[in-house]
Length: 118
Image (cartoon, rainbow, N blue to C red; front, side, top):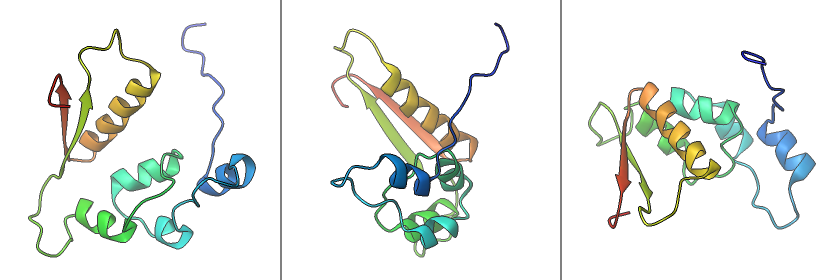
């Protein structure tokens, strides 16, 4: 029915790694660093279960908040590329586009590339 909410399984990093992770999966992002996030974008990604592993999570958090030493204040650019020779986009493409939309809502600059430069 129109307007009906679909059931959504809320996964935290801890429950996702404990319940469904294989022995070969990398460990989830450091719990202490993930809990201390202040960047609105990274907080959203963590809360939605999209954050599993990140190199220098505190540094990325500081950069997205405009507090990284030597970085200009203001929006940070991120890009996503699509292969224009593919028959169509798929659900994985939609997820990436939605993540970039969250990025934009948090005041940053998303860039989408389509074609040979991806």
